[in-house]
Amino acid sequence: MILANVFCLLFFLDETLRSLASPSSLQGPELHGWRPPVDCVRANELCAAESNCSSRYRTLRQCLAGRDRNTMLANKECQAALEVLQESPLYDCRCKRGMKRELQCLQIYWSIHLGLTEGEEFYEASPYEPVTSRLSDIFRLASIFSGTGADPVASAKSNHCLDAAKACNLNDNCKKLRSSYISICNREISPAERCNRRKCHKALRQFFDRVPGEYTYRMLFCSCRDRACAERRRQTILPSCSYEDKEKPNCLDLRGVCRTDHLCRSRLADFHANCRASYQTLTSCPADNYQACLGSYAGMIGFDMTPNYVDSNPTGIVVSPWCSCRGSGNMEEECEKFLRDFTENPCLRNAIQAFGNGTDVNLSPKSPSFQATQAPRVEKTPSLPDDLSDSTSLGTSVITTCTSVQEQGLKPNNSKELSMCFTELTTNIIPGSNKVIKPNSGPRRARPSAALTAVSFLMLKLAL
Image (cartoon, rainbow, N blue to C red):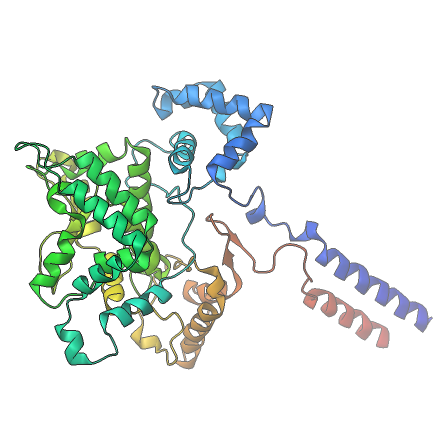
């Protein structure tokens, strides 16, 4: 009798663990319908190979032609096409900046996503793949080039922006493309037209897209101690041709012009996605990622929304597009908000200063102090870094923060702050999406705690 009971217990344990470990039991709602993102050119090819997707995509493009979103959705055929495409690879597709067929990729992306937005949005989602790497290596190069850590007297006297230009001339590709845009942007067309701005912008885009950041970033974000250096930094993009104009247009009008061009619209959306000030991170940057912000800033140079330093002040960093909020009417508040994302942006300012100093944010400080860090807001969950490969340093930082709450003797409860600490330690972000998954989702070994509890209870009953 006892052997029979033991056999039943072992059978029950085996079946319980199998059921918990089965993939069907692990499919949460957060993973339903998720697909790894592909670039939009490839997604378009996959859609074209499927008759249903291909026909619906053609229908949607016809629906979007000359219609606003409300008019389009009032048409049942248009709405059905949109619903089908939301289940296709086109919906999750992204592009890479500087890719071979970038413009085509962006045209495909916006052909889908312009039909999904409620009119004109202040912040638009970036069509580019998220940046998952950081600038630590380039920061170290900047530190070496700028003299940080060397003789302090020699470093103080050095013009880092001049050093950056010299370093560019030592690299054939950098020298060639820099000479090209300088020649084009300085070429006077006529007394009334000082240059061909369109060609100048194109040459600048080629320079910043094709030359490695260790050269371009050093020229754009070099640290300065005097006005001569700061003026050289301001002149990097030849602002008299690429930036300045006779009059400053309204910033919202300039944004409207930018959004009529797929490339400009995409670079502006990417800047907002990566440089929008966050008050839930140490650096004020989304995910504490300086590289993403600096790359997005550089990506806007060579378009109507080209930003630049507003003056040659070496102690203050203020950048802006060539526009103002004069004549905004009842849209003045929105215009000022748009302009402040450049002129009073702590994320962008901190990123530029960090690059000039050759430093990066340390996500896992050796001696973290809970009092020294800004407490996360209770009503919002703080951003997680895009760099998922840096999980070790992130985990150390989060664990220290959470344990420091306990070390201070705070009374444990079910508040959002404590649950947030637990969530940060047990969740990850799926790259290229806003969905959250559990760290070991998919076929995995199930947690046997519930099964063991049940078995222990049954064994106790048998023993009695």
